[in-house]
Image 1 (tube, one colour):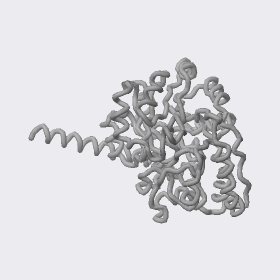
Image 2: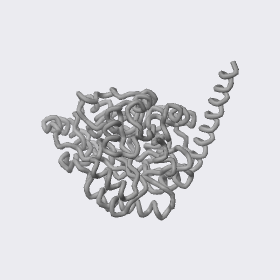
Image 3: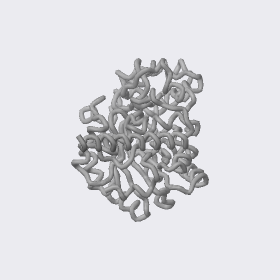
Image 4: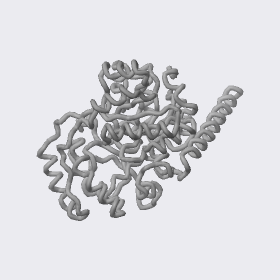
Length: 363
């Protein structure tokens, strides 16, 4: 079951692809060099920018790495609801002295062009978020020698990915920071906070599919990696844990907020993008989250300038501070040191589990 992935890394640690700048070539290369699997995030980038980052990464490491793509989204947003939200944000635009973005800037994230780049210049792994590619796409990557992973949040999504020909699924629990990688953005299908916890989700997905499972959601310690492996995963994907590393390209304010007592909890919100995403609760989320419609990527385009302006102004209360539920456990370690520490913790947890099993057998 695990052979499709285990030759990609020495340790079962995957650095999550975090769109927005955190998952830069320096971070991905360092994680891969340390024995994990580093990832670039192609979401919101042009195909040219994605290709440049791949070239930079290849110049930093000869080890395996992955690239994450966002699936195209249906252009079915409620225009009246989007317009009403836009009107609500006019005060934010005035405060940050920046115009609101165009909600109709596109819904496909240049998907086809990025596919063409990655098929012409194959990388070891490509993962997908916000939906499942067609069998033709996954077969094309298989012919190119690229392993494919599809992000899923339910057993049915996992089964769809297996049927389509994915090599593995990344099972994302509701604890995860950033966007929930659901196939659908319909509130009737995926209500806010309706997702499953990671360990329950891994167990359920194992009943539906035979392909390898990568676990994602709130993982910050080696003991948690051990728990996901015991539940049936072959590796753990970690985003928030790597976000605060010096190699991460995340904004300094975002890094500082992870352990700032001012930001004590996370919530799922549509406030910044129109899709459920987990972040640290701040002013923007409190004031606008309850009014944000299910309109992705329209709201993402609309608020992009606001978020950049807030960061430039040094105001974390207007930024999207994506974070998993375990954010208070973040450690500001160099990425290689973090991988090393996680491996030590993982080995200790496995040893303790083995000792407990032996004691139980004896008794």
